[in-house]
Image 1: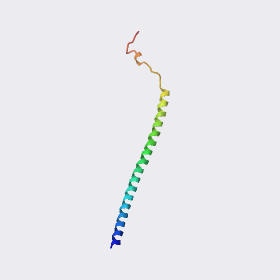
Image 2: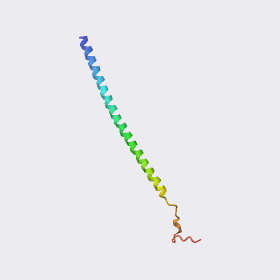
Image 3: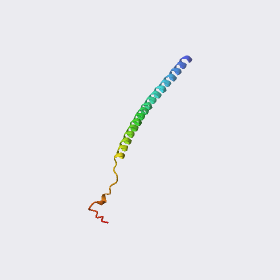
Image 4: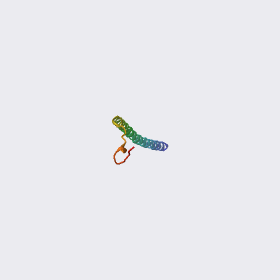
Length: 79
């Protein structure tokens, strides 16, 4: 009889341990997916930032000097 209870207790403990392991595996997989998605998003944002920097540099090269728009005939700045 004592052997029967020890066997039941051992089986119960093994069952609980397997449940814990299953839950831990699920949690690890979930956070691994989040990590992969975060790294992927970070890579895309970095690539987009580099692209925008390149466009900004090209626009800065093409930028014209400031032209005073008040020199038109409507502003009547006769000196």
